[in-house]
Amino acid sequence: MVRALIQMYLNLLHKLGFVAICSLAIFAMVAHADGPSTPSANAERMEQRIQALSKFGANPEGGVSRVAFGNADIQGREYIKDLMRHAGLTVRIDTAGNIIGKREGIDPDLPVIIFGSHIDSVPGGGNYDGDLGVIGAIEVVQLLHENGIKTQHPLEVVSFTDEEGGLTGSRAMTTGLSPSALGVVSHSGMTIAEGIRVVGGDPDRLELALRSPDEFTAFIELHIEQGAFLHEAGIDIGVVEGIVGIRWWDVVIEGIANHAGTTPMNKRQDAMLTAAELTLAVNRVVTSLEGRQVATVGRIRAEPGAPNVIPGRVVMSLEIRDLDAGKMQQVFDAIMIEADSIAQARQTPIRFEEIDVASPPAPTDLRMRKIIAQSADDLGLSFRFMPSGAGHDAQDMTHVAPTGMIFVPSVAGISHSPKEFTSPEDMANGANVLLRTVLAIDRGAL
Ligand SMILES: [Zn+2]
Image (cartoon, rainbow, N blue to C red; front, side, top):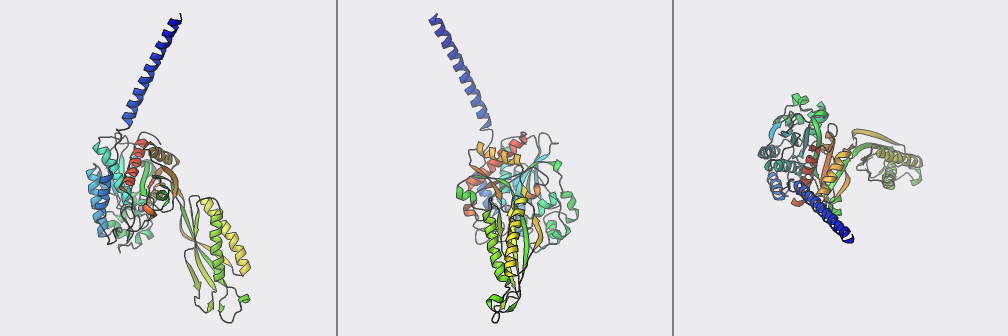
């Protein structure tokens, strides 16, 4: 009896063991199927392409001055079009001059998954801002192409026109360009309208460049951080929570101009002293609140502006940035309260005139953040959720598509400078996260 029981027990153990081994084998097969089937970015190829692109508009300091619409930009655009074709994309230029490379999906009727960035630079710029996003997007499609991986959704790689001159291409694609924007003279010396024509667009038919939300499944932009947070913290990937909003004011302080030699110190209404106190108050207010909001007084002008005259009037700037419009207002309200009491104490009225350059905060899509974070995690990369303090094409794309943004470290946080640098490994990490994000969205993760 006891022996029979022991035998049954041993049989059961044996069966359980078999089941366990089977499950392990199935698990390994699944893991295996998921692992090698997602190819990895080629860091060497990406670096080589970044170097090749940097020849167009190379400046003596080792960066690029590839302003939109100039000869270097036109040459760089040709190089990008060639890379796109090499990756199996069908290339077109929309009427805003955006370069769009398309790859058909198994279901051509599904809305497009679009990703990319820009290749124009500021004068005296670096080799990674924007460029990484375009080279990385092409790398993703090249990997799909080489490995015969088909997606359900059509894919588009985009290189936006003139990002640095005011998000020209992405604005034309999403909310439209105003006639006044078209007349602005760009760094190339051409107006935006002339420039768009030079790169193959048609400023008279810009409405054709507009895309509607039902055309897109998602937009993703890979970009260098342009700040030092990731590099200093040793974190691989930034999952961008959004592009911060910006508000600007002219702050006008009215004092009384008077002789600097004959007016006693206790008889003065000195607008400059008020400006000095208010500048300190701005800093005190913004640092006393919880959060990552920033506020800056960046410009100041005293009138009449002579060493021997007490300033009768000061005009200074105030800028506030944050991801939350309510927080921006809260900071401003607190500054106003301080301003009131400073104005009263010094008998110098303070007036805030808001300048119409405000851009509202552009939060990324919550689901997109999760997908990007999961993609980074799957790859064993460390990541952090963070805002973007700089503007990007992605902020326009939030109007037409669930948008996500992937940051990789900028060494020492340097950007808009020839010293801009991101390692090949970090670039490849970014492309791998982008690839996984695109594939997850294609499988319906949104
Ligand atoms: Zn950029």
